[in-house]
Image (cartoon, rainbow, N blue to C red; front, side):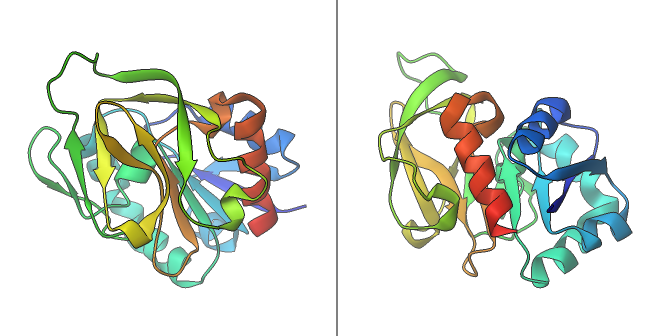
Length: 202
């Protein structure tokens, strides 16, 4: 059974992610202990809240996260956890992210659409990757966010449209660090399949 650690840095809906991964057949723990993180077969970086708070809270384990990523093992950032993988965000004030994936985080522009973008929306899968194995393009997943990721086309796994096209899922150049702007743990059978795919990658 694969050991998955959900990183606890004080921001995130950890229990629903925990249950989703358990359902996907993993042995799951919630921890901020560097030793446990480095020993894991896979790591989840969750997140709900503000970018600046996330970067303050994660400061003490930034080096551990980067060391884990350098090992080549898989990591999945969810929602705010995806955004802090990027280089910087304009939320609050311009704040540096982890810089694992090229790109920035922007607020949705003013329009007739409500912000936050909340609810079900379809994603278009833009490239093959084990995270989306068996997931049809056009599948509906669940979003809750006011800010979106802008990155290079080669780092996009899936796109979504909400007033503008944005990256719904991203990946680093090595292919082992992924992020989803949507919540797989709230996305029904499709989300559970994505979590299963992540466990299989581990």
